[in-house]
Image (cartoon, rainbow, N blue to C red; front, side):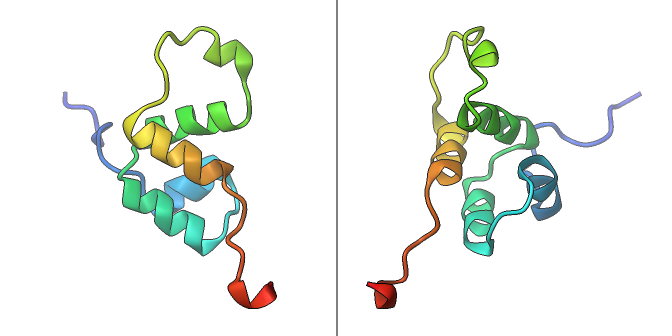
Length: 84
């Protein structure tokens, strides 16, 4: 029997919110644009939350979609130029 779902498919908006929690629309759209999978997003979130016990077991650095999602998660909310 074939497993349901494709583990390599990009995460949906709903999955992103389930994994990350509430986030603004700009970050959601940016994460969607990376094409990150749910598993990759979970890895990026673990790095962003500083789960050093998990990270210590990983021998590879962040790269590709995981790195892109991590960068988005770590950025502050965009500053509106009119507020300056």
